[in-house]
Length: 296
Image 1 (cartoon, rainbow, N blue to C red):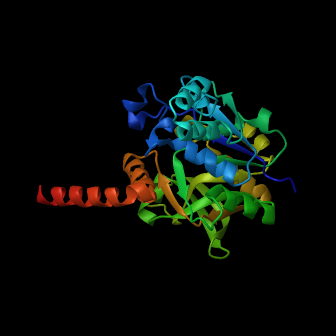
Image 2: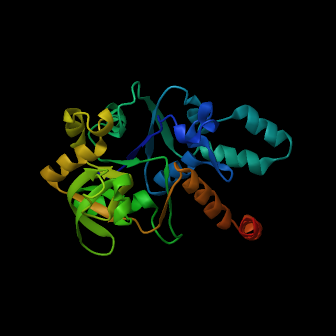
């Protein structure tokens, strides 16, 4: 079985939920404390053993490529000012691993974005990571996408990250029906993209990480536009499930939706609390703000 070496990260979205900040700044570069959101996702991929990341970009996203490129002038200026630690930090970004980009000329949905990578990925299994979904895992645990890669290596079947949510919220997600096969494994029997309220049959939501076999290419090419007039990855995954089987991994870690305003705030607070130099000040600030809000 071929090893998962490559990952696809779609970054072509307009980021309308974060306007006006995203009018000129790609939403993927909005900072979580002091690091762009996308960098956390790219680092997760490389830390899991991915060798090549393919970014699926749209117009106006060239700043993303610049962020992961060498910035000689800035690095040289920092060195000359004695800020060698900052210069080395920037050099490490450009050395994370091989990163390339593909232009998605028309935004036709997540399935179409993934399909845009076919010519680069070719006949290999690959990972997909959504840039809005951040996974925080314990130091002794594999990163989020790494857990799916391990499951794929064991079974040879496509893998989908799952999260347990209240049933009355499942309409916000792609939903996975099926049965548990252990604390973190789930055999999927059906996939439904954002089931209407009142039709809920599961509390397992599909959230932002996938490992897929190359067979998905032909399925995506044959997938017709679905909900919202877009080519839905969920629809293609359901066909893959019928033909080969499909598994879910309930990731051992905390998932944060950084594409949502409250989720973005949560991601910033969690990151600040996880840094020793910021933890005490963040806790004190949170207590102060809560006390002020309660008095208001």
